Length: 276
Image (cartoon, rainbow, N blue to C red; front, side, top):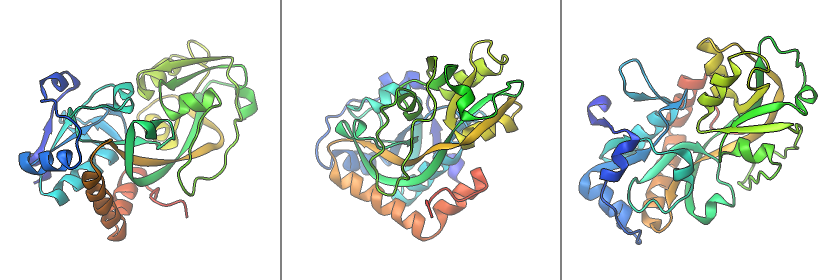
């Protein structure tokens, strides 16, 4: 039933999508009129979002988006623009929302709205299994890979601001000798898997994403405890409070009736929807 309502369009189709001006109510009106919710997603960010063996988008974030679309009574269409394009805002109607495990930082809030935090995830360092690193201190001065423009990038630059309510305090425990940025976490993982110190000494990413990579054969091991916990929010373009209110209402209902917890346990094996 859900599969029939899911249409996958790759990033190249962005240019084919009509452009709309962002005015109050316009996004919600457009979604309900067209009976279509357009999601921006990442096709290489498992287990949050990825192409499965049937060449269909799958994952925790995708399931959350499917449920939102279902509760709105519309179809879900997925496109895959670059992360930097999503976080830049000013979407001009090319897509309607991002369910992309985005941290609602103060800088991003200047160009985006964050109607609902839907889960929290720990961020951890990983090294190649042949690495002798056994603690976070061992990573100081090393070459570390992160996704460009994401919170891990900001953490390594020591300017990460997470000002959402209920976020545990954190310290900058690692200083890289060199930081290398990548379009996606997967690209960084691919460099680390080549061998200890070949291109990278370590990566910083979401712990569930690292665990999924190791489950799929990446020769990694995590080092130390998580260095921070991220509140991860649904993002929308600024300009439509009615649409934001609708998304907030649906996410609250999904938490209240246990749907969000069920989806978290399905993909992660634990409930990441609360910091309790």
